[in-house]
Image 1 (cartoon, rainbow, N blue to C red):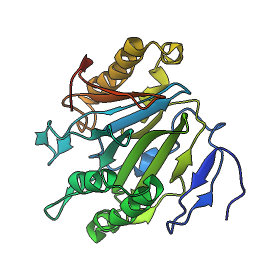
Image 2: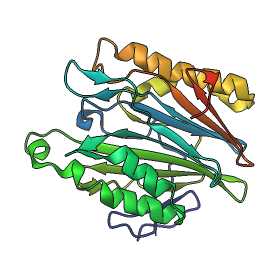
Image 3: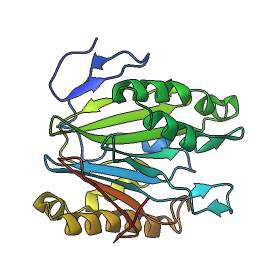
Length: 252
């Protein structure tokens, strides 16, 4: 078991509930190795304060080097359970829709920690394809979940890489920077934290949407794996959730 601290509880590689490392002093961007990113990853991001959690993503599914599905929703909510979540990485494998499968787990009545542990084990199989591991290509799945527990923000992070659970998987209750996964997450350095920390809802949503829009624009002559509509969910500390598509309030 890792050393105890008050900022993170780690699921552990085997799904055990362990204390993890304090990310409060780490760089602004979650430290995924750029060299290991699979090229068909899209983009998602989460930011939280004591008063709100905001989460969002693009909606592109890369089918091949030149074919895309730009209507693959990857950010979701459950108003009854007061949860918001977003994912990126592998979407479908051998005719199984893993986004749908993850959503079924997330919408179940199980404890959130147990949901995340189950999801990380479910995603070991599709990310373990030997054709990827033998060609030195990393295949990933990332899930971010936001929730307020006793009025305090919590961020649940699930990452699976080539069939292995990440050491970063855990529950975080103290972060002071945006968490992102996929490609071009270094673009989060351009998120205006003064606007985000002013806590004016409309301004926060517009700034956060602009971040994802900028990533889409930046990616046009790069990997071309980020695109489509921008889905954003905003939840206040009372669990009230508002959803947006391309910066405009819309139901999803």
